[in-house]
Length: 553
Image 1 (cartoon, rainbow, N blue to C red):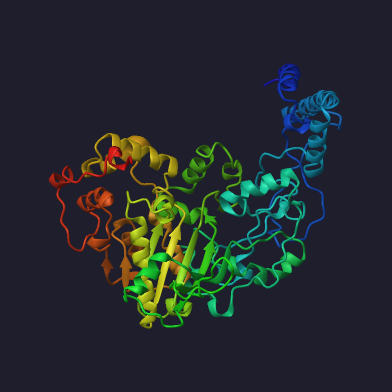
Image 2 (cartoon, one colour):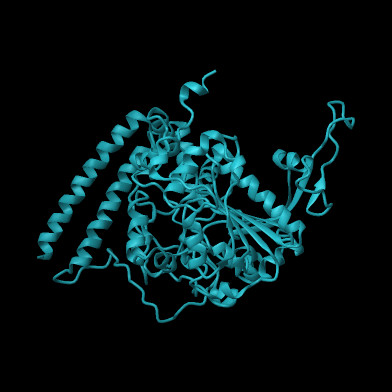
């Protein structure tokens, strides 16, 4: 295109945008009155704050930023014309925003002042490989040491932003609450966490195992995540914002269902795994010897946040990395532009829930193939697990698995329950309740169980267990003696990852709530594992759940 023609086009665009800016400003002012920077131009900027160095490949290229103040050569190139027009547009918008700022109320002006204090630079929507000022810390996923692997840095703080080698933010979905706390002034965005004495207890150490050095075994979280303050102490002390994504601790579980099991004599109080609870106290503080206080269960536990190595995640699901990135960008409302603009950045911290691993018995036994291991992989169900809803078998399965893990630990082995935040088969609780309504209005027969979910969600299950075995490899597990589950998806994922499962067992019949018979029979008929009952398609119409009328009192 002729440069003079391009100049005319850009000048017209500039005028139109400026007019639109003024119109929008007037409308917003009339409605709510928002701060200046809320409608400030969105451009790339380069942070100039001093920051610690990260060893990088000196051969990486840089992109020079055109300077609009430099006289154009004759004839001007399209790039310099664009730069000049863009700078003109920014000056026009800044002028109109300054005028707008003077009309704000005291409250709006205060918010605007805080906004500029927190975010003095123009908005940076995305970055590009080789961009000036961008020097990502090198990372080699699956390296045998933390030093060779390199830290994971996703912070946008001035000292760390140019060294970012990961997309997203720490804490998963809770990163939104962190942003809100910063906006409200409750949290200083530059606060540096003090990790003194936060390391795992010595009795619950999770040490390096060969799977950590296999880039194909663990792709959904950082295997070094619980050791970050130790293995990257030098980098943290130098000012880089590097954070743990795993925490390991010890705890005592207090469950009324386990109290009852002990009272029935089905689990013993051994003083180590299962201990007697402290006496119950009356309102005046005195001990009440007439009430059985029940028991507590000693466990070790680890909370794990998701950290995705995108090439490995894509390979697990049998799709290209490019397709994975595009889908994550498009179907999260374009939340993370760097998924498509930074193909050189291979790590993504998704805004989803993580997992918690509960270990019954010595954690070191998990890595010892001579020790008996009982496993339950459980996906979150708030309605049943916490509040006891009987429309599904989630809580009965969870309690039964905990009991089996306790018995295994008391017999010299080790038990493991891994609890994933995948509410409603990863469809979410709102979708799950909509499906419940459809089921109950349709007679709630087992033959419509999966169809009801598909009618609402378009798919019957989105848990996709391909990433699930990662936590087992992280813990050093090479075989499972007993798996409490009827899920073929979970079984196939674990066995397919190279871990042997010697025995499977499902929930005993007497523990299945009547209203959840619909779920169980539908699963058995569709091919889920069952140690006993056989269910045909013809039987499904006969299995009917409780009607709404029966629940009204």
